[in-house]
Length: 68
Image (cartoon, rainbow, N blue to C red):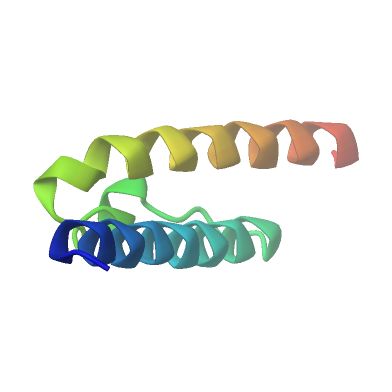
């Protein structure tokens, strides 16, 4: 496996882990800061993470509206 491939895989795993953590915080009724979930990623991966987190946030907010 090339260095670029392993770096991409590591970034994808980190994005997935951070999305899971963000989703858990949302389902626990917290209001996590998207910005705090972007800081661990290299700059080139932040856009991907941001898109994923915004999608999760929208789903979380919609779910709260349905319950409330």
